[in-house]
Length: 371
Ligand code: MSS
Image 1 (cartoon, rainbow, N blue to C red):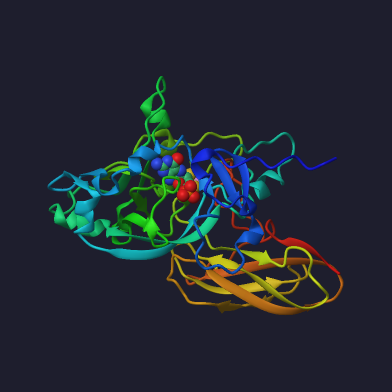
Image 2 (cartoon, protein in one colour; image 1 turned 90 degrees about the vertical axis):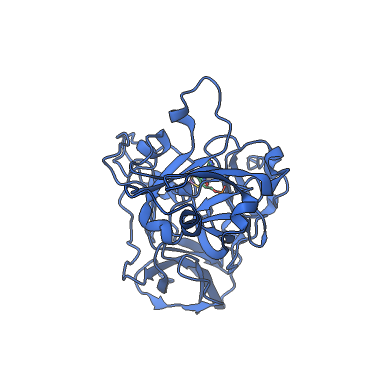
């Protein structure tokens, strides 16, 4: 039978390159594994998309500098425009933007006995590495008299219009992260040197370097230093580490810091016998990635790969390469990264009911036929 026709790109991302993307739904669009290569910075035309609710209308981009963000939980709370934020400071940071569910398919593939993990079956493509420019949140807080003494979290709220008829708590995109991140969070208006597109959260996005995608609030309209985590569903029960078939609750760990991870991006197919360059990307979440090993025999033996290209900082991914001689036949290629704190990717990630934070090396291993 003919393969099913590829779904077209939805209108709000019609400007993206369809050749590089897999459309799961209007809200979930994955980057093809081969479209990453050794790119240290993922172009916006191929960066994955994930929305929990429909994005706001693009009319919100008509006056980017006039976008207003309410800053609360500080001694002198105020609503500031992007133009005012631009006067308070500038920072640039490269981060891996990765959906919490990236790699969920590898969990789903292992389920037995009627167990179910719902959610998009992402493989490795719900991730990219991008450069953000904006103001450090710390500079904003200092300009407004400093944090309210009791604050323990940074809580960001998305600017979508809430669908009518539903309880705001159930649909609002609002996330809290520990206040320790005040040293690295930025309120960004640029991605890869251009004003942020609506699809990726323009006019203003809250970036939490090292943290999973969901914590990076698009079209941010409120940033509050709060004593408690928000009770929004997306924080209280979704994006929690719970067992298969169980419900999420605030007693379980939240999906915050990304674990160390890597995957091979080439060769995918069409490899010829002889010398091949095995290449891929690796990152350590909050910690720099310090080492990558590659196996061409399904994990029986490992060899140290070399990093290539510049180091864009601890929150970015690095490209790696290992030259190998591959005879004709079938080979199972895998990569295993270690971060600066000594955390190593396990063979298998411990399964969880939301299919979050996958980082086992076995799942994304590639079987290639060398001619
Ligand atoms: N934000 C908002 N506002 N909304 C929504 O929906 N989502 C999340 C983030 N943020 C949202 C937000 C998610 S979930 C993710 S991943 C991210 O975002 C994505 O991004 P992009 O740009 O790529 O689309 Mo999972 O963890």
